[in-house]
Each structure stands twice: as C-alpha cells, then as structure tokens.
Length: 484
Image (cartoon, rainbow, N blue to C red; front, side, top):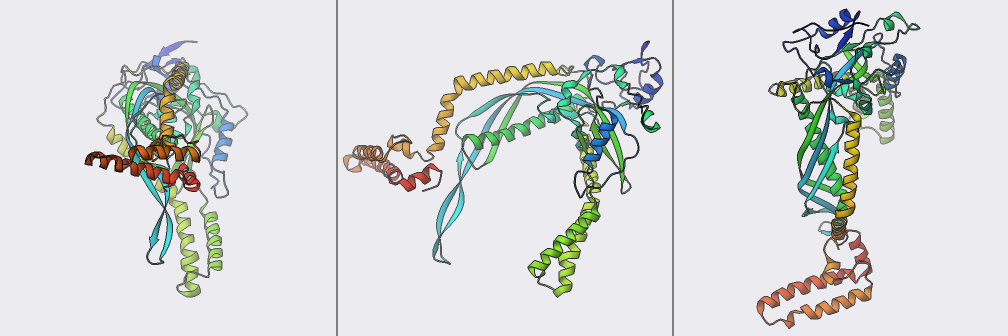
C-alpha cells in the first residue's frame, strides 16, 4: 500500500487531517474539496472517528421502525440507498463548581377560610415560601458519555435538532481517524445503488470557541435543573422559585470526533427530510411524519361520539353541531398534522440562521490550548476518581449538615426546638417541658418593662408550640407539614 498526503493548499478543509491510500485520491479529493476561503481544520493527530459497525440493512430496519412506530405514522418511502457520511462533532469534557446563590422553596399547605357567600368555612391549598439560608455548592465532572449535550454538532450543513439524534454512548468507541474507515463492504448481495455508495467526510465549519459556548450553556442548564431537584429533595419541598445558580468552569477540553451516519432522504410536500441513523449503535434522529388521513378519521369519530353523548355544541342545532363540533376540529387537526413537519423545518431553519449570526464574532481559531484528542478511558478514569472523592467528602463532612437540614425540615416552625424536646417525645415529656419553660419565662416574673416584653413574646412562642404538640391530631398534621 502506498500512502500520500493531499497536496491541496487552499481547497480542502481537512488537508491536515488524513493520509490516503493510492487509488482513492480521486474520490477523496472530490469529497474534501468543498471549501471556503478558510482551508484548515482540526489537527490530524487530534481527530477521532467512530467506525461504521452496523450493516446497512440494520440501518434500514431502524429507519422503517422509526417511521412506522404507531398507527398514525406515515409510511415513508426512502429515496434509494442511504448516504454514508462521517459527521463532525465537538466533544466536550469539563470539571465545574456550582453554587446556589439564592433560592426559595415552597411547601403546599392546606388552609381554611370563611366564604361570605355560602357562610361556610372552605379548605384551599396555598404555598408557603421560605428562603434557603444555607449555602450549597457542588463539584462535578461532565463527561460526554453521560451527557449527550456535550456532543456538539460541528457544522451547519444539516439542522442541529435532527442530527442530535445520533449522539450517545457510542462516543466511547472513537478511535484515531484512519483511511481504512472510509472502506466499506462490497454488499455483493444487494442492488447496484447500495454497492456504488462512497463514504464521505463532512468538514468542520463550527469553530471550537462557538462549540464551547453551546457546551457551557448545556452545563448551566443542567446545573439549574440539578439544583431544583436537590432543593425539592433536601427540603422536602413541593416547588421552587427564584433559583439562581453560579457555575464556574475549572477545566474544559474540546475534542474533534466524527460520528458515522446513514442518512436517508425523504420527499414530503416538495421538501426533503433527512433521517440520521448512527452507524455504530443505530441511534436515530429526524422528523417523523404522520398520516393526516388516519388522524382525520380518528378525529371525526372521536368528535362525533363526543357530540352524540354531550348533546351537541348548544348552538345552531344539528347543523351547528356537525360543523362546529365535528367538521371544523377534524379539518384543523388534519391540516396541522399535514403541515407540522414543514413548520418544524422552517422553525429549525430560523434557529440555524440565528445560531450562525450569533457565532459570527467568535474566535476563528482551531488550535487552542483546550482542544485535544478525545480519550474515552481518560475521561472515564477522571469521572470515577471524582465519584470516589465526592463519596468520601459526603461521608466524612456531610453528615452533620445533612442532619441539620433534615431537622429543619421535620420541625418547620421550630415547635419541638422551642420546647426543647425531640420528635419522639411523648405527651408527658411535652407537658413537663412546657411547665418548666412557662415558670421560667412567665411575664409576671419580670420587673423591667423591656424584660417583661421579651418574656411575653417568649411565653407566647412556648404556648403556641405547646398548643399544637399536646393535641395528637394537630401534632400529626404538623409533622406532615400542614399549617395548624
């Protein structure tokens, strides 16, 4: 085998990327000659690729299953054999520290109020909001195998939302990109259209600086979602609001990785829709299409039954019921079903346009300190080490803090704390504690006006706590978080 480098100086984005075998130069030069004024891309030694490991027929079965998953699915007709393309991605790995700057947690409580219209006491639900006083901070490792949001499509050729479907754990199979990855089986048992397909490599057109912004946005969104989950779980709350999370990225690394994709093209209402199937694990992304005729029939049957049992729309008699209750909803539903894919396509086109505009002023450089080759084993080891350290810190330093938080949750108004008794205290313990505190803080024992006022306030707190905890029913409701 004779190897040679592409001798193209300004016409190929990836002339720094691959070494090619003799006899493939014509095909590869045609594949890589798509260019703009900028000619370079990620360094050859930093690029990794996931090999095609799935047979094209396996991809075809996945395609049929994806577009025929339900009764309402439109059986899509493929436009011949799929294209086999290596699609570029930036894969991010990061170490971060986040801190909950502020947050409120809310607990739903049952209250009663007097309704003057009915002259009755009515029960309603309200939310009690509390500011989180404790500062919570977290250290986390983000690795792409666990977070597909760190796998950023590195081009604008296809719509990002559809290509994102091929992301996943297959990234751990990435290897150095070698020319033999462009070889494919002869498929001698298949039609000519399958045998004549040539694998292609799409160029990187999104710079690392633009990709890292998308990765950081994903991290920020993830930390905010995790903060919500943490607050709801830790404080046994029903909802949160005004949550602000500060994220500090201590380390981030970006790696260029090519994903293998079988790309099927579907023509629908004079528009091309593409379905992307990962050539390694068969994960799939693309716009699903639905049969508007079946949707219309189902809608007509459902609305007709509803009108029959409800007695019509109450306006216009039988004619009004037919038009407003059956015909109009059926036509609206079928039209929405028919044109939804087109609307989705236009929306994603607008999103792509805005994304390109937002990246116009980003740094135009491929070789930065934080761009390096992807190493799945290294990322896994870093993630494992982080989990071990976190587990140790939690077991060593987190027990007292956890217990303190739980105590606040179990005693939201501090009644047990006011009387100086535990949650397992019996009625005699509560009565004894109240008598002792009542004698100590009774306002009549104070002579100074200021001391008398302070004693009065303290005595009211003690009396309120005793009033709730001495009554088994009220105590049980209090322990459940109900406002009593």
